[in-house]
Length: 216
Image 1: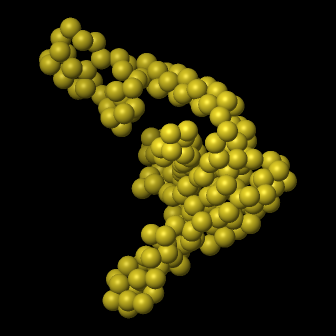
Image 2: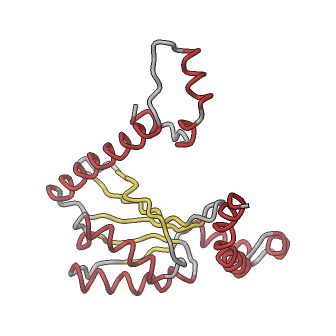
Image 3: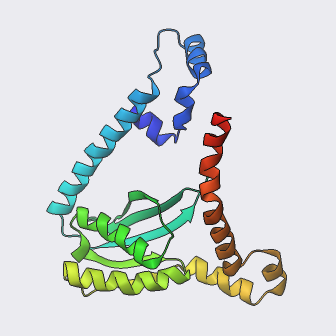
């Protein structure tokens, strides 16, 4: 059940509605749909099991790794950082996994993102085997490049790290720069930073609104 829930990207909130259980009872009376608490516990247990398997793989393999990473803010004003790990196995097959999805509680500065990524790779003890990181061309990633390289060198003895800029993002920037029609139609990076600043300013109000509504 955990694998089905995870692989189908089913929304967690689906299991808090009585209508969900009523529908299941009508379509499959002999099947009892698990509660959202059971789903939550099962997914976490599966996550920890996979984490142990990953640690065993990292400790018994000699592969070098590259990472791709990106940070964003969701439509509900929650920040996340994704870290994807890539490598080539003994049969020359490209492998990749989502190493971590980290909730962010501060501004997405280069120092803060570096801190979170270093925490993750250090927990798996693979800092000495990271040969490159691919990111977009945002200004915070330039600081990330410098700080992350120093961290890998000082904490993991890694002198081989290289930063790679996302080719698709480079192409996107080039097209917008040389095409006034597109540039005027879509928001540029400066405008997105302005919007982010406004969202950060409004965040405390959004959190206070449900409390004020319930108290009234």
